[in-house]
Length: 164
Image 1 (cartoon, one colour):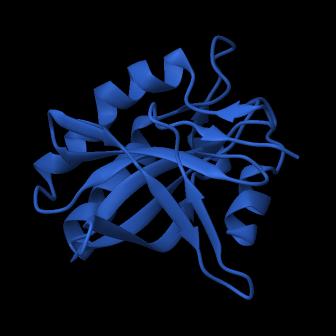
Image 2: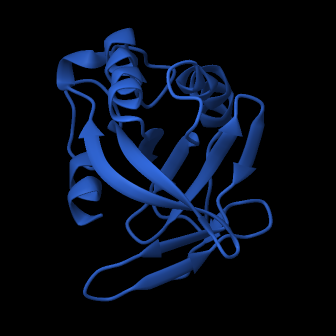
């Protein structure tokens, strides 16, 4: 997670934020679906498009590479970016609108895996998972395993509260 956050916090020549993709594997747990983050793939500098109306716009080549990962590796794909610290971490209206356009496309190449979107800040994460092209749900719990294990439960609307 530290490497992922570090990458997403790098500056770009014109984009105001960075974007990447996380591959996931899935398993059925006692309380529902469990997703395991596998690898992080940053979007290359030359795959961003100038668009001052959004924090970052990525081109078709970035999405093609993510679709290819899903197809060839049989994994779920999660679009990821960062927001700053705020009392409640959640997606912007633009994030939600754009996710509805591109996340269902991943089911055309890997229909057996869930796909989705994540938003991070320096302390926590929030996300949505698609179980099918028209079945989207909030992610209830994030568990970050490392030297210190962190368990974060989302609010009813899927957002994460953050208190410094």
